[in-house]
Length: 316
Image (cartoon, rainbow, N blue to C red; front, side, top):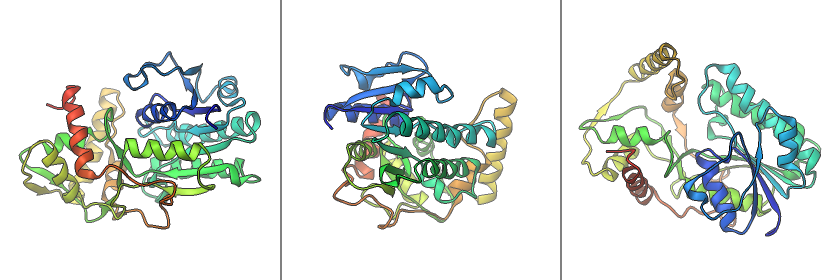
């Protein structure tokens, strides 16, 4: 498939931008969907085919998917004004891309990037919308499931990520907050992008898979925040945050966002996700080692991410 076209939605987002670079590095021809002419430091020297448009425009989705050898649907919302907005993008957008891929690239592998949160749809509107997106893709591909791959990444971190920047900012304080009693799997964006690129190239079979670093059982928040503190050059001193306080902070963040006309990432739904007891990844969920093996562990990955944040002036 070295000369084939790989179509990517959500290419201008955090994971999408790294995925485009990984695909191009492997010699793939990459076609992306974007609302405006894209530019990214990772894409220097890459000749991209750009389709202007959005998930709501059938003509744009036709142009994106037409004749593609694989279609990777990365686009989605991680924050929204309400549950309806989450579902409009994460469920209905997935269905629209799946329908276009099946119609205009009927032999193409369709790779849906979901989230580990989809495992627990009762926790939040985001988690429910990602599970609904998976179900929408399965419904479209019910007669040819051998073309459908669904990937559930855990928390993804790395250069250019603003979502996990908050972890390193919090770890820079004299007292580092910890909460909950569960464990959370993570993965570096370069590892995630490499795995998804291999899946799009036809490596491995269809199905539902999860990703993780070399410690899929995950980390406690104390372990995560301790690694983050060391990465920013601190010796961590921890302060435990009660669950009720974290939920209250989520409600306050959502209220303040509404007051300012903004959509904060942190909300009471996000607090519920953070307090969930098990975001680990089991051996049965992971991509098989023949397809994917993590190359970047937490200590190396966190140090490199902090170095990038500091170089980009995102973290003092």
